[in-house]
Image 1: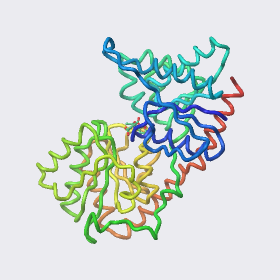
Image 2: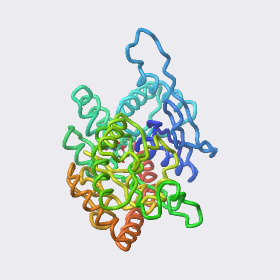
Image 3: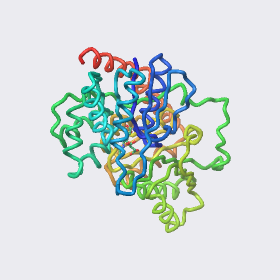
Image 4: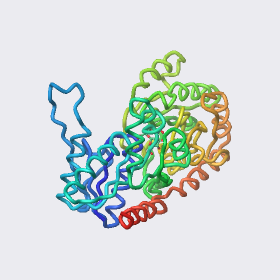
Length: 376
Ligand code: GMT
């Protein structure tokens, strides 16, 4: 199949999922065209089936806001015609589903019909899309998509609750390439660079937005380090990073916390991590948690959104109510203070991640595309 993938090219989960999906589809012989405003961070163009088309938005002083949707839909029209693309798969409803629908309509005017699959990822529904200024356009473009998928049951239910959706929403969970992430016993882990033998390593990876409850990460760690010698690895960047740095200073734990910034080598950090913290306010899935689990790292998370579908309470880690820092810290200490228990949780985390192996999930997308093309 010839498929165009529209996504955000950043470190965010939706862009990562879209890129990994495209890469695996290309390995399986499909022709994949990424259409976005810069090269996706995880995209290596080393496969003849992968094409990348950049959307340029010319700056014009009249515009207070440059019209990206217009440039994207025009680019989609041009690329579909030039490469005879058969299907559009847009990740993150805003503004991709809207621009995709406009492209479909423009193509229809020229006698070209093409189905559009929209994948909902989370904040496009729960935080941003739900804002009254966007809601009518988001609802419209979801209803106008030919196929709609969501990355968890929780997100599907939230979408039905928040919007007047008339279409079936198919749940296809996020995925991971298990083999790639499995810990290689022979490769050096560089644990000794980060902590002493006695210290446990706790990790958090995110875009440091408010929704991730970054101060809770620091507060949970603060409780842990009182009981267990440990270090906290903070990976990623965003508006709450300075807040976290300040809090570490106030709590007198700066020497125990390392801020890495954005990294494309998270597997290397996860390989020496003992525990992963994700106390988010809401999380449609929690791809970062799944990536940690695939590296054998247990999860202490909130129980909001789709997190219970990924992190199995009492098995791959523990779930607590949002904001219950004391319980999260107590559960972390319970796992970390007993080496045998820690080992069991590490094995369980890896085991639980296998449900989301790309080899199980990718055929679901392939079948969905085939059906979309047949029904169209
Ligand atoms: O919040 C993030 O981590 C970024 C955001 C995005 O749009 O890229 O992530 C959302 O999509 C991911 C991939 O499907 C999910 O794993 C995240 O849970 C989801 N984030 C939220 O729902 C807050």
